[in-house]
Structures are given as structure tokens and as C-alpha cells.
Image (cartoon, rainbow, N blue to C red; front, side):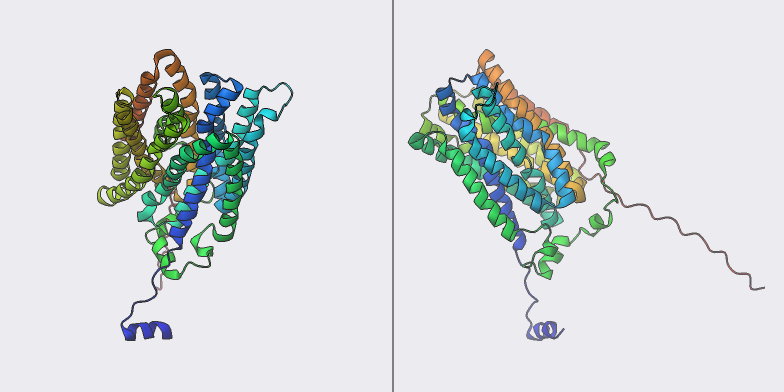
Length: 454
């Protein structure tokens, strides 16, 4: 009280809100950088692996799909675990797991398990990497749901894509350089070591909620909680699986996410090889140019999140999220199609990169919609959504390789553009304003009869 009176008397405002939530988003970005490098490394090192072990394009397609298969299968279990036990401890366990498995990729050909070929060994190890990395997206989105205010959700979830973009931009350059100097194995050892270092930082600084963080002051806590009182009050007694699985908006969201994931994984898995083997670039050129889709992601993703948040404030939750998704998916499909048909290599790369950027421009609305629909159980819903996105991503390297071999790479890219367009169209039926978490209706008071006093 004395301090408040002193502030009032001197004309000075109270203490400014701390900015710990933005430092937490920095950690969100760091974890996504580590996990996305674990995802991207094989798509770049794949050239050396294919040459050393005489693997075909179809063989590499299956190896690349191993990660995506486990990544899709384990999204929902990890997301549910984050809702139940808290995202901090789940992410600690998962990053350690994925780091060890990433380092093990370098020795996969020497596993010599009975009856398992080199192809099978790579498939198994990459499957294990995907199991660990699967925890990142749903649990980091849970961190965003708890740490960001209602009007900052779109921007907050865009930091997941920023991390993906940073990793995607650095991976082709750094890994291609390391491959030229020391071979394809070193990037996997380094990736595992960096992951262990990152998890140490995570353990010492992060908390599950802003209330439990020692550096968050009351002003920042009030800012985070503003407008979210009804969400806290509407938390159901048990996990609302039935409501989640019976929601049309949820099913539209996850089907559209599968379309988004199909196109996104072409850039993760095939883009570097496409540049080197189809467009004729050298390994070093492929490393530099292969970063362009992810540079676009870094630029477009926060813009998409910001526009989605502003559109929600102006047009309401349903139309605002729809607008963000339509802009992203529509322009992504257009630029992917243009890039695939361009005969000029530089123009093709730039158009495809812009297509990737718009893909993640729209992706911010997907993540924010999960938090809108069920803020208290966003880990489970984002896990379900990202599972479907990665089932689309699992099919992507297999189908892309098949179409490319039989019909050519232009047709393979056309398929990606068409699937992206379908994903955007599905948002016509999506309503992010739907309330999956609904407070129980209070029982009506029983009228008390007046006493007859005679």
C-alpha cells in the first residue's frame, strides 16, 4: 500500500509487466530448431547415404517416411501426456530421446541386427527419432496456450514455425558444408549433442505455467490472463474426448492439416535432392538455395499469425481464422504450381520458396484454432491435428517419389499444389468459435414458498 501511494504521489505508474513470456517463446523456438534439424538432416545427408549404400529413390522415400510415420503416430499420446503431466517434463524426456536417436543414425548401417538390411536399419533408427520429436509440437503449443494472452495466440504459435524455418534455413547450408568436409555422419553426432545441451537450458529456465515462474510479476500475469477467465471457469471435470471427436470443426481441421502436411514435407524431404538431382545444382549450391523455403517460413509465419489475430479481433474467431488459412493455403498452392512449371531454375526456386512461406503463413491459424476450440486441452487437440498433418507428410515422400519416377517432377509438384488447394477449401466448414469446453449449466434455484403468517 505504501509503495502504491508513493507511486501515485510522484505521478509514476506502477511496475511494468515483465516479459518472461517472450523468453519462453524463445525457448519454444529453440526446441523447435533442434527438433526440426533432427527432421531435416536426413533429407540433406540422403545424397551421401544413397551413394554409399546404393539406395534407389524409392528406397530413400521409404527411409524418409519412417520418421514421418512415427511422428504422426505419437503426436496424440505425447499431447495427452502433456495435458496430464505438464509439457515441461514431457519435453525434457522427449528431447533426450530424440537426441540419442539422432546420434544413433550415424551408426545405423553397423547395427547388424539379425535379418535387418541397411535399409531396414535406417528405417528403424529414423522411426525412433520420430517418436521423440513427436512430443515437441503438441507440448510447445500447450506452452503457448498457457503463456500467451488470448489476443496473442496466432503470433505465439507462429514461433513454432519460426523455429522450423530457422532449422530449415540452416540445415542445408551447415549439413552440406559438413558433408563435404567430413562426410554424412558428423551432422548426426552434432545434432544429438546440441539437443542435449538445449534440454539443459530448458530444465533450468522453463515452467509449465506463468504462475509458477519466479520471474513473472503480477502485471504480466494479469496481462496473460486478461479475457481468459471464462476459459478457466469452463474447464470440464474430465477430458472432453467425446466432444472433441464429435465436433465437425475438429474433423475439418485435421483433414485440412493432412493436406497442409503433404506439401510441407516435400520441402523437408525432397527439396534439396530435387535441386541437386533435377535442377542440376552442386551440393553447395543446393545447400544455399535449399534454405530459401525456410527463410520464407521465418518471414511469413509470424505475419500469418499476426494477421490471423487481427482478423479475429475485427471479424470474429470463425472468419478471422478462416481468412488466415485461406490466404496461406490459396497463395501457397498458386506459387507451388508456378514454381513447378518454371523453366528458369532461379525463378522456380524462388516461387517454390514463396509457396512454402505461404504454407506456414496459414499454418499459424491451424495451431491457434486448436487453442480457440479447447484451450485447456490444446495439447491433445494439437496432437490429434498434427498426427493427421504428418500422416499426410508420411504419404508425401512415397507418393512424390512414385509420381516423379513415373510422370516426372513437374507432375509431382502439381499434386502438391492441388492437395494444398483442397486443404484451404475445407476451411469453409471450419468454425473456430465453437466451444468444446462448456461450463455445466447451473441448476435453477428451487423457489421457496412464502410463509403464511396468518
